[in-house]
Amino acid sequence: MATATSASLLTIILTVIIPPVGVALHEGITSRFWISLVLTLLFFVPGLIYSLYVVLA
View (cartoon, rainbow, N blue to C red):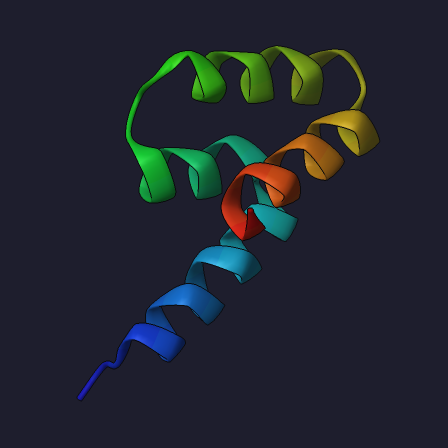
């Protein structure tokens, strides 16, 4: 049985591996997803930092 904690953990793991996917799972396809996608495509680390900020905040 999945709990809220395990779902959050899965989202964080996906965010570390593929940042835009984590944001999409957390918020859907919003402007934050597109910002995360662009930052990840340009430079992985800023995209990762921004995505973690969105998911954890």
